Image 1: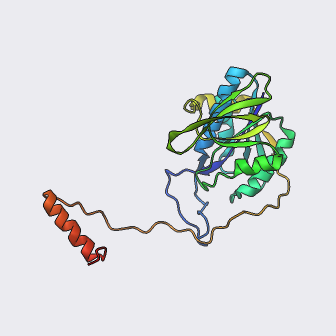
Image 2 (image 1 turned 135 degrees about the vertical axis):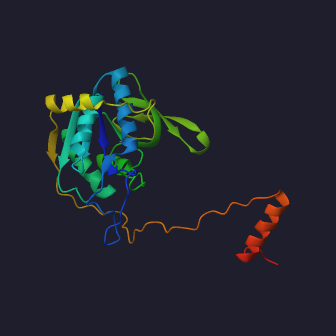
Length: 258
């Protein structure tokens, strides 16, 4: 089974984020990027499937940020191939454009199963997997937390999570695109020493990105940091005193109707 995992570089939310001068996006001058958390789960699920059922795992990524190190890390974790799609992606790319680029690149990469992260930390729209499946004319299932290929490799049973902790089991024909929310195990760690060894012994493959004209679907009209609000007020005293103080506060702010 040939499994492909597209991964995306997203802003590291631990770092301080700044809005650019135009107010439409993050200032990418000093922006630190890291692999999307959900994509790490997609890779882990792919590696678990490979260990159980055999096959290969290919990681695919657009050339953004420190993507080389990320791809070498994926190889150190157990991926067989790492492919970088080269092009002008440093200022970011919309979900629609990314899906078209990935779909065209996959024409040169054998695939029986494509595992994407269910969404990315920077846009939260969860559309790349759906758009990719549409471009490839393949079935798609999202919010997946487990995959089990059927004998013969023509179908797979997937576990899909609904609100309230309800789980469903669905059968999907292969090849297919699945949006992974959580792997069956926590994403594995690759030691720095192993990543450095892989950098010396393996090479990244490169595929030039084709020209793409794809609408963004939505545009950002304004981006701003949240305004700093007043600190919370802790009410102390007996229950009666706290209740009286709450009533007074509600009255001061016009929340009470008389």
